[in-house]
Amino acid sequence: MINIGWPALVIGDLIFHQIALRWGRKILQQRGRFLFLTQARITKLELFFTRHGSKVIYFSKFIYGLGRNVLIVAGFLGWPLKKIIKYDLIGCLASIIFYAILGYLLGHSYIFLNDLLKGIGFILIALILLGITLQRLKVWRFIQHFPSTNIGAGKMLDKAVCF
View 1: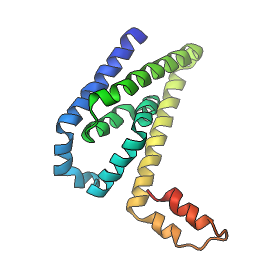
View 2: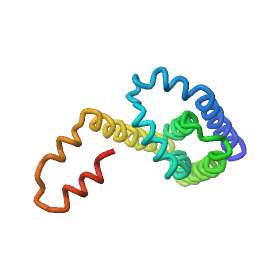
View 3: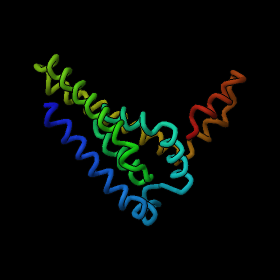
View 4: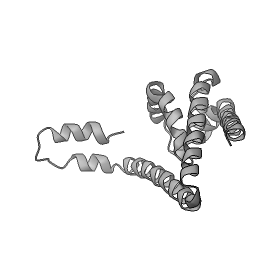
């Protein structure tokens, strides 16, 4: 499984990354407004990837459906292949070993485990989308106007919830 799965996963990731690196920025400039990606958000995303991009690339391999999307974002942000390859190789190998061991230990419950992991991945993606939607609807700013009983809570809320 590792002999076939690891190279296949890495090659697929690199194909998506190269497509996004080559044509992603152009498509984003033309159609970014349809994805609610303003220049300010792209700048925040670039800053976030500058600080945490390697960790995001590694850990996204463990969340169903997120790994390739992160590499697409890294591609349209202009991250070169030599910058992401190490974290992609290590993340892919670690996730394949993790899921192989989990499959071996829980092999009799494979269908249940597969559905569970997909469900967890979909729930995480849904929570991310919910946060983006609430931020777009400016619900966070509405919540911040409520007075708090704790003097420091308002400042903590400002830092914790605003994207």
